[in-house]
Figure 1 (tube, rainbow, N blue to C red):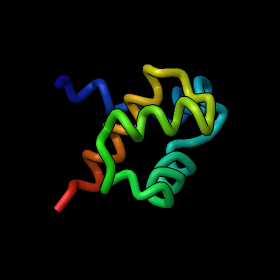
Figure 2: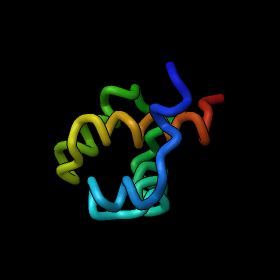
Figure 3: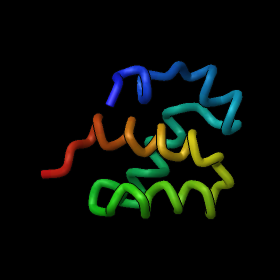
Length: 70
């Protein structure tokens, strides 16, 4: 996977989701995303927060890269 896929600017995320990266990282932490399959996390962002699929996948990848599973 290319680094550019998850290396996004806060401005891009705000433009596409309405919230900054920090908000999404905290939301995924509270959801315990590190303990779930990535597809489940993507679905959560799409269904519970109306995040477009591309951005749900990007935010999930960004979270998991910064919070690796044990």
